[in-house]
Each structure stands twice: as structure tokens, then as C-alpha cells.
Length: 88
Image (cartoon, rainbow, N blue to C red):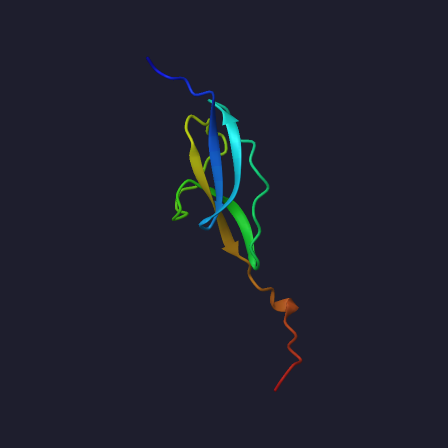
């Protein structure tokens, strides 16, 4: 006989640190959590692998426990914010 699981745990990671967890009913979508922040970076999306190479599709229905990893991009410095009048 097959055991039917009614809900799964989604574990959200910021690097190697567990950031948050969410309980999701079987065969439903994640509601998501507020993404983590990282100085000098912008949150891009959640990945299904710690190597951050595979983006998680938010329209995927959950059928198992999952780990999702935060993918960030480095903020680009805007040249207009540099003070070009400082010389040594």
C-alpha cells in the first residue's frame, strides 16, 4: 500500500544557511517567502541546486520535500555615484 503524503517541507537557503521553511500541501504551488538580502547584491530567483545552475519554476506543483537556494547578482556600480573630484 502507498502512503499518501498530504504536505511537504520547502527549505529555503541563503548560501549554506537555512533561511526559512514553508509547509506546502501536496500538488500545490509554493507561496514563497520574502527573499533574503545580501549587501551589494540583488536577489534574482530560487534555484533547485546549491550550485545555482538550475532555476526553480514557480509554476511547479510540489510533490516532494525540496531545498531551494537563493541566486543573487552583483550590483553594478553606477559611474554617476563616483566622486571624480577626489585626487590624491
